[in-house]
Length: 349
Image 1 (cartoon, rainbow, N blue to C red):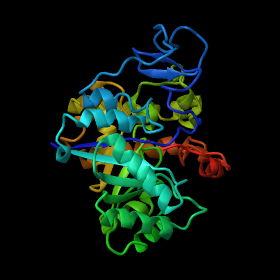
Image 2 (tube, rainbow, N blue to C red; image 1 turned 180 degrees about the horizontal axis):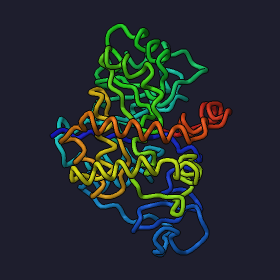
Image 3 (cartoon, rainbow, N blue to C red; image 1 turned 90 degrees about the horizontal axis):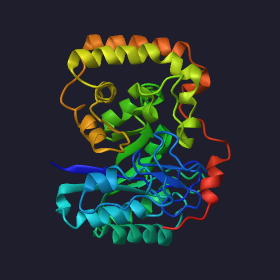
């Protein structure tokens, strides 16, 4: 079975570098989380925190990539880890998808980013190479032409984009003459469905795959968190989906998900992911930290929700939306100067 391994080389919104090298971070081996705090114990489980992450095991793709990706996802660290794993795996049995920063505005810069990725991965090609975000300062056709050259040279097998709206996606496709865009990675889940207005139908018609990130809303749709049991890590604490009002509003939805899951002998996570698979061109990519998470996700693919179940969920979603502030219907709101921050920040590949 072919394995798709996708990892993110872009810095988190909080602007941290890879925690493996970041000052001030402490690590919990039990929770496999990094915290920027001064206490000695993990705020989540109480275990003693370390100043350095646990030594990474070798020759285990799930341990090295899936479990560690959430922490070691910047400055090429994930690629170095994956490169070690791939030494013991047949290259044609693995599909590697990675991104490059939109700060790479010249052909020389983009080539350097790609060559560095290939070197870290220990491979001669990347299956899916994606621009992480559209750069408003650089014409889309310019970037696409450079990617098409790299495709012609065989260094990348497919070109993808991330966070492109429909107009930008169409522009990117029109800029290519020898190949085409195969995917658009966007935020899509039960609570953020704006791409259903036009993007999904267009991609279905044009055979462009939707790679949906944050399908579980960072765990909000797993039933793990409530208004009295909120997440404590920095990223989730700053997410508007974890406000008391938001968590309370999705309780009826979670109850419906739990009821359907119990009847089918499935988990809530599997029901949520399967809801997304009703679109044949959509591939959700939830984050994982433990081996059991990987197995849980795999169990979402061997069934399909029926019309009655889908109708029940739609009614609960409508009920949830009617009680939410309008600003929360469009996902995480980034600051106005976010684009200028990321496009002018110097990055090392």
